[in-house]
Length: 388
Image 1 (cartoon, rainbow, N blue to C red):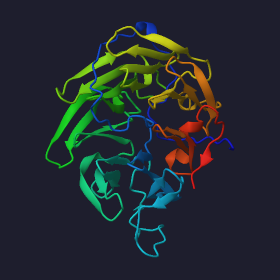
Image 2 (cartoon, rainbow, N blue to C red):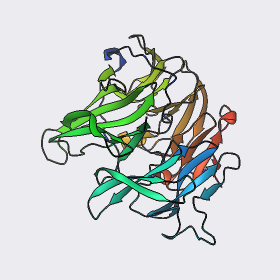
Image 3 (tube, one colour):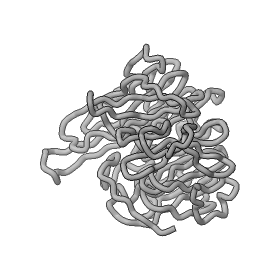
Image 4 (tube, rainbow, N blue to C red):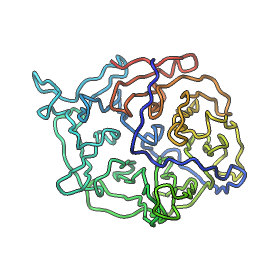
């Protein structure tokens, strides 16, 4: 593939300071319930333009700049089919059941309990709404508002509830703000703040559901003045865990953590520390072990995923945080941090990760051409295959 670099004006937080390493981390033991159904925690924390269903996937596919459509992605053929059964439909305008106007969030699509979910940004009342779509595209239903209009909403579903947060905080950061993890029942009857954090440029993000708990990251960023180039102070607070049953939250791993993943079977937590490396620990143990040392100018910052067998690590955020171009890769690793394969990617925001069957990528931050690699070939693959 020809390498491309996509420069985006909206991203989570772009800073280059060096912070605490793994030696200063504080760990708290956690117990999971592996029998609990989880909400596909293996996808990329910045964009979820693909979601798994029973026999395949749903994805957001670009029609042209600013407009998209919902498609079913067949697992066997790797063909995409617009989610519309209208006869003689062009599948390119608002008359199509699959059509998504520019008001829809093109980076987020979800499948939960037999239904597809997308986010609609209504500029008439300034609110974003959760919409439910039939799995065959035959109807679309607006459920309820999830907050003021923002392109940064992300969702996690659990036990007929949706947990809502914004992956992006205040960029200016010289005034305190409050980041909220909001819970709404899908019937619209319950609405509460599951967790709040107040700070300069406060942000809650990377929420993933594992074994009866909702894990997430907390960060803040501030400036000493309103001057454009005023010095920034930026702090990652580590990994937090919200217990669905008790509704209590605790900080289970402190430190400058950029992403994490969990092996529920062995109850092992893997997390990446900025400018340091990849760490591993049993959730029941407070002792963490570094299993991969950061490579300067390559893996200073990484994102993680786990499919039950291999760890997957992406260095695409390096370009975002350091404003530098670098070769980007998907690293395939065993659970001891040994590199098994290193697959070139298209640049920042390409890798979506994936389930136990496939890993996915896309250019244009999810809106463009989709690519895949079957997990059966993951140890030898060097190129991505275009989705039809």
